[in-house]
Image (cartoon, rainbow, N blue to C red; front, side):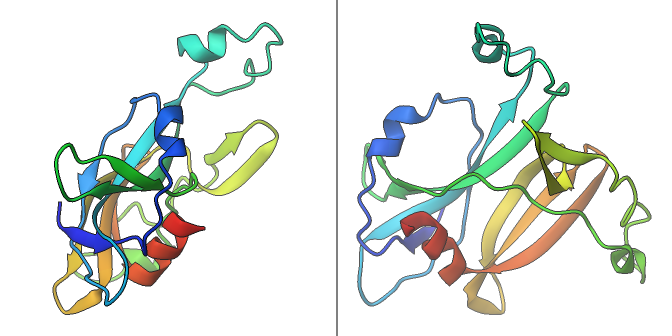
Length: 174
């Protein structure tokens, strides 16, 4: 993990709501002139009808859940031991690859495919895959104001995209 900034957002309340069922990946940093220095990563949560949490629901609200669903969030950690969580973004999902991404020498032959299998949670359907897993998160080499996120789509093919660090900060402090 490298260092970033959360503009002095000390949102420790969300820390108590995290059940620990996640995987973190470090990110390249962005020092800002004001605010608190933090390390930023991505964690994910697997939602499954087979999970004990959902099985314990006496109202049976989760019976329509598919096998597995994944959502992600950004997490900001203090840079000093014990590396407390100081901010969490809301949950989000990572998108499909467009068909145009299949062009060229390094294009994916699966880009634009399997888009009919979309993330559905309760009665809402989102324009992203059921399964996404962030496997890389780093500062962009050519532009320190951006980060690059690498992830897998539906356990089938890889994708990478750039995100502005200001957008990550916005998600962490909103």
